[in-house]
Image 1: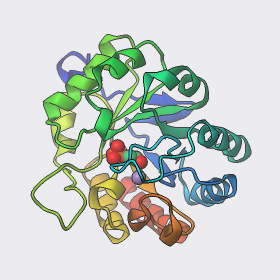
Image 2: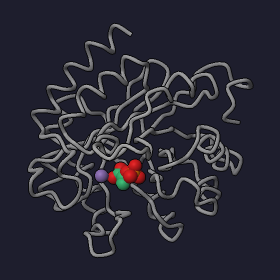
Image 3: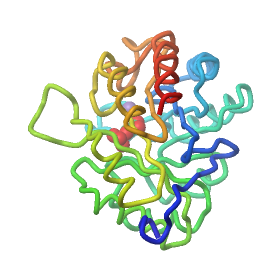
Length: 263
Ligand code: PEP
Ligand code: MN
């Protein structure tokens, strides 16, 4: 179902009225984690004014250490919902367990499946039971074939609204958090019709790497970007080092839109 051979046109996925794919660029911005209502509201307002069309925010966080901030859980989703009402941006948030599938289906416009759950096959099969669009992140060490097969799990179970998201892969390099694989854009274009979003924030792990990689991604034909934006990165509860301040995000959108016009 994901195979380009049986579906020559690029798929366009509708996320609560925001189209992604074809000529439509998805610009997802927001904090790594939902911290407070005021925090998310402030970021959402500025990000929207800059041109973001979707708001991200983690409520359930897949942290490496059990002692790190794990997210606000359901309270985080309520904050996102309240901000959505106020600002009008559809929301993107990560689902980690089938336990919360129903509540995500009800409240979240684009359900993110994180890198660590890309091959959680039970979870993928259950996502096929709903028709919410799914943002499927690439696993830390997944090949293109494995990644597409995970999309296939969701599609085969009945939900064809899948968007792929490259967020960097594990290599021998440790200077950057991960290595951003921009070759995935032309390769996936050949193999599949699904839209491709690039997340330079989790790839590089450093805020000053985000601009150049985001521009390169758009120049290479990405269907969208996911960018972590925080009003006070130094005090962020998660991923502050890779988060852009709102004014830096604004500047990035300006640069990216010039390239997007050219492509
Ligand atoms: C995230 O987007 O906040 C996240 C945890 O990403 P990943 O699954 O790519 O690490
Ligand atoms: Mn993050």
